[in-house]
View 1 (cartoon, rainbow over the protein chains, first blue to last red):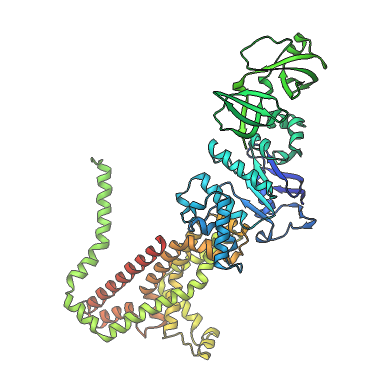
View 2 (cartoon, rainbow over the protein chains, first blue to last red):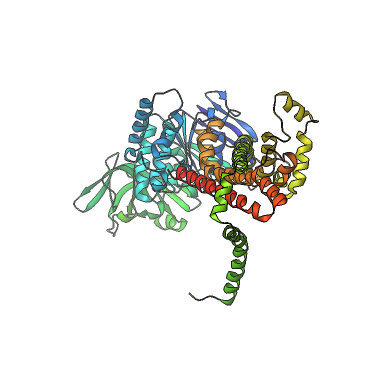
Length: 350
Length: 259
């Protein structure tokens, strides 16, 4: 278990204050916040590149705050990858296991194995300057993982990639985590957190605003900032499939949603904004292809007006104005219809 | 292409400066027949002096690089109080007159000083000996190595060193596998500059060791005793040998870097 206790650090332009959190072994822990929130600095403090002014870092109840960089159990993948430009891809990956008493063949095998995991075994002899951003990212990942760090630290690993590459790397990260690797991942993109994390810490201006299981943080944001930043409440694990020219997302409870996407079939997440859900009192035909009957379980005021939780076997959160609540005479327990367009349903593959 | 009058003016002035550098050298080559150069290359005294100059300068460069390169790394990577002052100290040998530098170094290593005494105890004479010449050469040429190497180390991103540390490498391994290879071009360039500057030194050497004669001293002595036409062939020969060395060294360092 990793535990940060009351970490403080002053920088010329901002301050990390009273940072505390725990990461259990096997967690996929995402630190979510806008740029400038201090997320990278948290990773640098853990890795020992920066010394905190105050506070302690404990790993399995051993204080490692003063430990040297090279003796810490953290493998950090930098946002800019920091690939050694004068070495081949293979030499980069093998850097940490060379001169460690292993034989040449053993090292070669390990490099190849790691490269295969990261799907870059065809690049081993290449020079870094000939690689794309996505390839460099995978080299950095393989180079870090070959050392088998107890904690894998990722600084905005998907930020520099275009959409098509993101999905591939996301799957890879998920796979690595499912293999038992504890991951601490820093991002400004709530979709990444949604899809990957089991625990989320929302951070802003050097402070942790909210921390908890991903579902809790997304469904019950504790502050306006967290609510705005975590964005979407309607997200469901789903499987995408096609029938003729139609695409369906099948939720875990069997509910089918129509959507429109170019993504290939497979597993992922369905995302739907609360603003895009309409509530009506009866089943009036509209242009929206998704229509469900449900019962209002909860109407709660939010920074956006009102949030109405409609249980249709699947719970949907609709965001509507005070005026609409009054006009439709909505109250808890009332039966209503919700509808939304296929084009407003997003699918993110894992 | 059309030139503005101002550009023509710039080109004219630049041409004058280039001519100023090339002119005397070309003039000297023209005034010296290949025959004369060939003869002086057979002169044992000339051969000895060129050999001495080359190996002593090489030795001075390599020995002082052992401390100079780490110093450059330290200066590139760390900020400390009085850093600007230390940088000023390193540039000092460039700005002070070299004869004055020679006097200063002589005061430090002459037989009356502790260093001089210790030297003669272990059989190492400085005054009038190659060791003294090497020290004089190093004194005036070390700034070239330290500054070039410091530029090289500064241009290596700290991130790469942090990444290597994070991968479990010791600071020493980081220096040898990351910093030094990536700064290598600048370091070699500094070594060559230091070597060249050491070879051409006259002022400081003539005060510490008139004998054995390095080539710049020999040229001066020939000129003083016999006149311009006797000094010229030695000068031409020395320039040719130096040029040959630099071309070869540059070539070697480049091919190693691009490999």
